[in-house]
Structures are given as structure tokens and as C-alpha cells.
Length: 405
Image 1: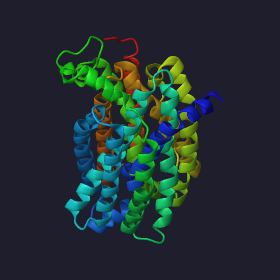
Image 2 (image 1 turned 45 degrees about the vertical axis):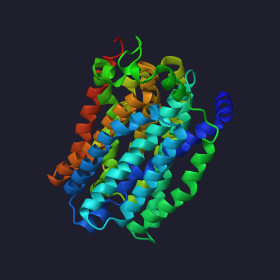
Image 3 (image 1 turned 120 degrees about the vertical axis):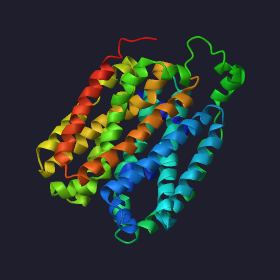
């Protein structure tokens, strides 16, 4: 009841955050992966070559995100959000129209920057700054948009490909977003007050030269050991999940499953991800995100162990459930941890830095796994490698618990 009361009281601003995280699906690897086979056929690319192109586009978008992402600290939220949404729609049109490989590369770059990068960054940064005592609850609510988009839109895309070409699907999606996303964002933010702009006016641009004690900026964060101890465990769900979802066509072929069955199992992924997201929000408000962080990869480790051990169809369900649990916890932690550790004064700049690392990790996993697949390494062996990484990252993050500045 307390959750519902909080959500209703803040329904307009939370709806804005939820909407942006949902529509970030365009730039997410799982959605692009639905068209993996068609895109490789259209441009005559191997698994590794497409993975490399995807990595180049993603790393480039991560570099741009560091610069563009910090602009949310000094720009009206409505203006910033509408520009991001417009860029996402234009990216979808570019993807549909790409005639040659360089155009495809640029379309992938634009989708990754606006979709995976800026849509989520805008949503989580604005919510993390707006709420304080109930930040965990707020982030858990808006974070439901991510797994919901993954469950719904992957199935919608697969269904549409039965009637339309992959290029036509992207055009349909662009038109749908233009009709729904832009008007909704404009209305939801029509009466929003940008409290961070008031702080920026009081602090002034000179704050970076004479920063008040206890206020963290990007430069200070890069000198903090905790940031580097936390990043591996923070990146693990994105790195591992992106790699397997990106190459799910090869995964289901190797396991003897059908693509429709595997994408249908997204329902379980969504169910458990959303459930754990809602559960983790109040828990973060009570104990803090930093204390939960070292333990949240345990379910994913179970998923990877199952994936490496058997080809039975039940393994696909185990993988979706356990991965959904980890991602549900991770989504909420990710929206709260940087504000919890470094404050909200420069949250946009700090989150854009952390998000750029995450985006780079999602760039590396498809190309690394693509090369491994091209080299004949089995998906079972890749799962075991990921299991070792996840366990090691969890141990590293635990070392940051007792550290202070």
C-alpha cells in the first residue's frame, strides 16, 4: 500500500521515467539481436564482423555519452528529454534506410547513443536527483520499463518480421514512437520544475575550480579506488547478458531450441526482473545499494552454470529466471548507487561516466563472443568463462564496502 501511495503521489514524474526506460529498447542489444541474421545477410557479415561493427558503434557512442550526458546537469529536463527522443526516432529511420555498410555503422552508433545510452541516462539521472529518502522506490518503479520493453518488444519484433521486412519493422517502430513518445514526454514534463538548474545557478561555473568540500565531480571520482572496485561487478550483467542475447540465434541453434521459444521465455525474465526490482527498492532505502552490490550476481552465476551444464529446454527457463533476478536487482542498484556514494550535485556527469563504461562493456561482449564462436568455442565454454568473471567481480566489489574517501 505504501508503494502504491508513493507511486500515485508522484505518478506524473514517475511515468516520465518509466516511459523513457521502456522506449530505450530500440538501442538495446536484445532488440537489435532480433534482426541479427537479416542484417548480416543484407550486408554479407560474419558473426565476428557484425560483432566488431557493433562494438565500434557502441564504443563511439560511449565516448559521446560522456560529453552529452553531463549536459543534463545544466539543461532544462524537458528540452533535454525531447531532444533525446527526437534523436532516437531519427536513428530508427536511419537504420531502416541504411543502403551500405558505413550507413549501417552510423545507424548502430545513433541507436546505441540515444537508446541504450541517453534514454536510460535521462530517466535514471532525473529520478535519482529528484528523490532522496525514497530514491530506491522511485528507481525501482521506473526501472520496470526496461524488462517490460525487453519482454514485449522482442516478441512484437519477431511477430512483425512474419509480415514485414526488417527494414519495414524499423520504420513502423519509428512512426509509432513519433506518435506516442514525443507528445507523452511533452505533457508529462509540462509542469516539472528543474531543481538542479537552481543549484547550478547558485553554484556557478566556478564550482569546478573551487569545489565545496564533500562535493564529488568527475575528476574526483576517477581518482577514487572504490569506483574501480565497483565497476567490474556493475558491468557484469550488461556484459554477459548482452553477449548471450546478441548471439541468441547461435545459442538456440547450438542448444537445439527454437528462437520463438527462447524469446517467449522473456516473459519469465520480465516477471522476475520486475518483481525483484520492486523488492529491491525499499531494501535499498533501508540498507543501501553498496551493501547489496557484491551479492547480486549470485543468481546469474546459477544461470551460467546451468547453461554450461545441459542442453535441456528447462535450462532456457532457468537462465531467464535467474538472469531476470540479477538484472532486476542490478537495475535498481544502478539507479541509486552513484547518488548514494557521490551525491547528486554532479550526478549527470558521474552517471554518464559510469554509463559509458557500461556501454563499452556491451560493445565488447558481442565482438568477443563473436570471435570465440567463429573460432569454434562452444557456448557452454563461454558460459563457464562468464561464470568465472562474475564470481571474481563479486569478490572485488566486496572489498569496497569498508572503504571511505
